[in-house]
Amino acid sequence: MLEQEIYLAYEPEERLAMAYTTNAKIYPVAKIVAGVFDIYWNKSYEVPTFDALEVSPEILDQYIGVYVVAGTPAKMTVIRTGSTISIGNGGTPIPLEATAPNKFSLGPGVTIEFDAAKKQMTIKRPQGERVFTKEN
Image 1 (cartoon, rainbow, N blue to C red):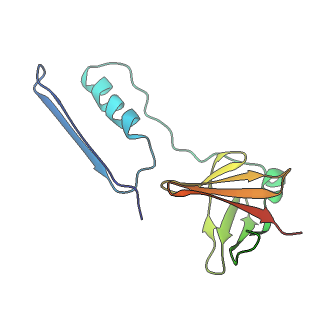
Image 2: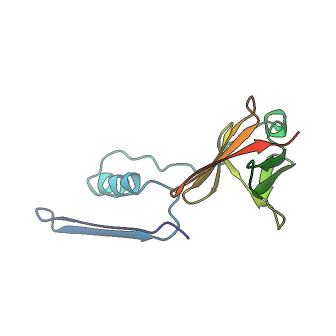
């Protein structure tokens, strides 16, 4: 399920109303709303860049493998294609977008964090976290 966000603001002195809604939030609503008001009041505002973070193949290669949750049938496979890693559990692998050298976004509200030293991958969702361990 996609994360949905609705925001409504009204400034009576300015007679200014602003409404915002999304069903696939990937950027903090507070920053969007603040940016809109900064532009309205002619304050300096820098449009954010949404360039993907480039992670070296040497670092990405540390994350490649099959990850499991002990005592369960849960299994995820991480592969690398060029400068991108993808994750899957038998179907078509889903590309991950790097947000830090060891952190990746799988989509709105879902992040994946790798700890190469511990051979772990943690999938974080609003409902909670699940830690997977890399098979040898």
